[in-house]
Image 1 (cartoon, rainbow, N blue to C red):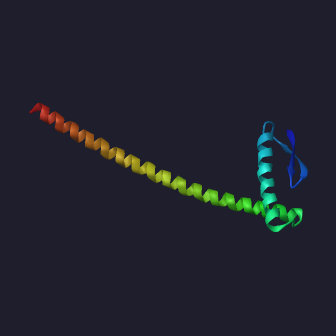
Image 2: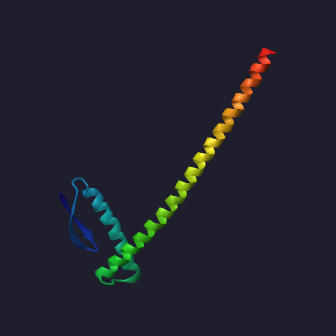
Image 3: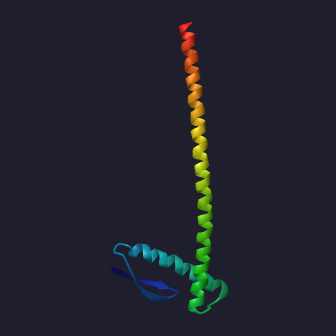
Length: 108
């Protein structure tokens, strides 16, 4: 298991992670630190625990919004796939009907 030192709110934190995940964890900490810095800028230093809580709640709110948007997009995608299948079926039927007419005209 790897260890990485992360900096949040100017303080170092040593955290364990799976080997190879160090860069990903560092990026997550950078995102969290940016949120902490924004909260600190907006409301001032609250004490580290409350500051971290506010930052985490804001990130959780953003995640919740994104999950809602994803669910809506997935529903739209499923609807469009269904509509595409219906359109494809109508197109096949139209082509088959046209082919029958052409064959009928060719045989006449």
